[in-house]
Image 1: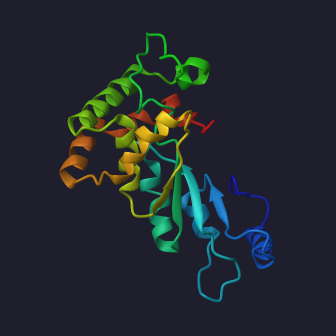
Image 2: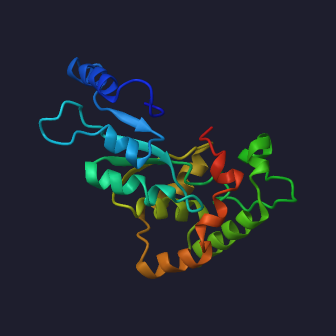
Length: 210
C-alpha cells in the first residue's frame, strides 16, 4: 500500500490483503509513506484481532530528514514492523560534492533533473560537505556514511539505493559494515545541528525516489 487510504475502512483493506496471503498470491504485507498513527491503526491490537500483521513500512529517511525517528520508528517498535528506507543519499546530495552555483557533475542525478537542481540549497550543501569530510576522516565516503547511519536503527532492515552502475554499488556496499560509535554519532549530530531548520527545504518536502 503506497499511501494510507483514509476513505476505505482499514479492516476491508487488510482483510483483502490477508486473503491474498492465504491464497499464496503474496507473501507479506507492506506499506509505504505511513505515519506512526496510521501504522498503529492498521495493526492488530491482540493475538485474536482480525487484521493481518503488516511486515514492513517503506519511508524516506536520510541525515537531513529524520522525522520518522520521532513518529514512525516508535510505532514500529510497538508493532514489530521493520522499516525499509529510501532516499538515504538525499538524491545524491550526501554522496556528491555539489555546489549550488556550479554545473552539476557529469552523470549525476542533478545534471538531468531540474527538481534536484532546485534542491541544492547552500545551507544544505554546506552540511553535506562537512559530513563528507567527516566520512573521509575515517577512510569512508559520504554515501557509505549515509548507509551506515541509516542502518544504526535496529528497526531498519533494508536500505534502498538508486544504483546507476557497478562502480556505485562497489563504492556503497562497504557502508553496511561501518558500525558507528557513540562518539561518531555525537559528532555527526553536531555537524547536522538542529535538523528542524532543514524541514522546510525542497530537499525534504519534495523528495521522491525517482
